[in-house]
Image (cartoon, rainbow, N blue to C red; front, top):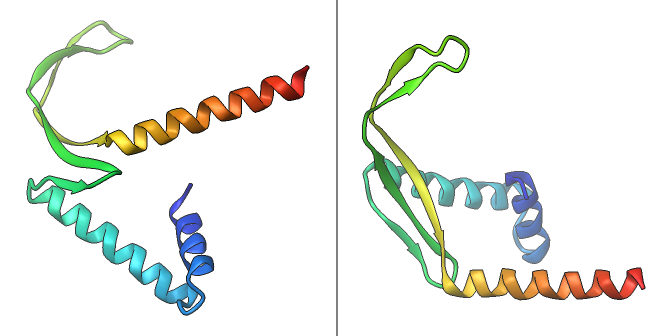
Length: 106
């Protein structure tokens, strides 16, 4: 699902929202989440999951073409950990889809 798909879904679900309002709402939420992560904060959405920033220390890597050692600087990268409810819902839906596909193929 892309950002525009999310906007379309929100606008379709709430008839009182125009497409522009839905787009603004999605942009506001994503901007707020991005700003919080940039500041090093953790975002937790119960039942969905949590976003945090992981620290990757500097290390020595290799250039695959030349085999030469390359210093890779430290980084801070966003990380998402799905919540229990989301994991279980995805797992259950996947099992249902697999069972449905098995019935169709017989």
